[in-house]
Image (cartoon, rainbow, N blue to C red; front, side, top):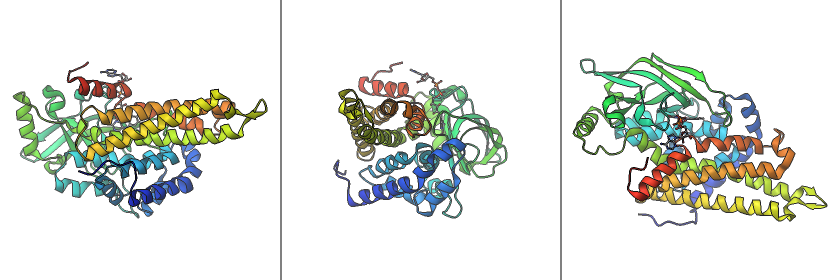
Length: 403
Ligand SMILES: Cc1cc2nc3c(=O)[nH]c(=O)nc-3n(C[C@H](O)[C@H](O)[C@H](O)COP(=O)(O)OP(=O)(O)OC[C@H]3O[C@@H](n4cnc5c(N)ncnc54)[C@H](O)[C@@H]3O)c2cc1C
């Protein structure tokens, strides 16, 4: 076990500066442009790959840090740069986490690198759980996976909704129902390798925020994958299904296991957006004059900023604690959910207050705070809405099946 410390070590400080420099020098200057274009920012992701910020080595190194803090520290800086581009760079990590959380060591070695490709041939991963009729209620997935024993082959059919990198990814990780009667206990995760026939992109969504990140439907029409693409392998699945049929605990379900591990990271994304808005509005409040003095000289404005600073620090402390716990013990009271819930709600409030501090300018697209407000909102929705985080926390603290 590693001691919990608020002092970042030399490596973490270096990574923090490295990501910050990229966010400031490369991402911020083009953030508005990619938001307006609503397109995947390939040149920026390629540049991130060239310096090693987008790539399997960076992810593995950051995830291998025994304190757990390297990843949230890096993500905060990246999303401080821009959340849409940040998501374009981080989107593949969800697929990688889905593989790492459910796959065998051999599957992890084979497929995680393919979610990233190389610096000269950038590839993407997508993690496909949500469906038009099943977002929060993951137990109701309709996508079916049927096994043909003679061919050792699975056939997948269904439609996935709101998938980051959906249809443009090289590797799609798909959670599907193998035995619908067992609800979430009858689900498994599958790799759909690059260029597999039957997988296509449905509609690409036009979004409120993180518009540089690609979000689309994924249609699975008789998609056939070999038995080796079942994450964790057939033996493990069969024994899990047998236990579920006998009503014995089957451990964590595939989608849930992935989301639990990624919650502090999603909190760190929101934190980056909140900090960007806070820093900007603090400087603005010192410079903008009304009634003959800087607006910050009014308590009404100064107290807003005091509140923003405090909420941001509280969010960071929860995120760092959760990230450390994820590596050094386990979540007991829904600490991962606490961090994601607090940081995402903070980001929405802080960015709204930032608009208020900038007044009319804040409401226009000439200034970045309205974009940050739009970007902040997604964090209260994806990877478990704020209500679902509260459900997880209330079940953890009470030991009861709160509905
Ligand atoms: C930009 C974007 C990117 C995304 N990326 C991905 C991705 O890469 N992969 C993926 O699989 N999914 C992705 N999603 C989907 C996302 O995870 C879901 O939208 C989210 O989980 C909510 O599900 P839903 O939209 O069906 O809302 P619903 O589940 O229909 O919820 C609607 C409302 O009801 C509330 N609610 C539902 N159940 C309860 C309850 N039991 N108690 C209290 N309140 C409740 C919710 O909190 C919410 O406020 C993405 C979504 C967006 C918008």
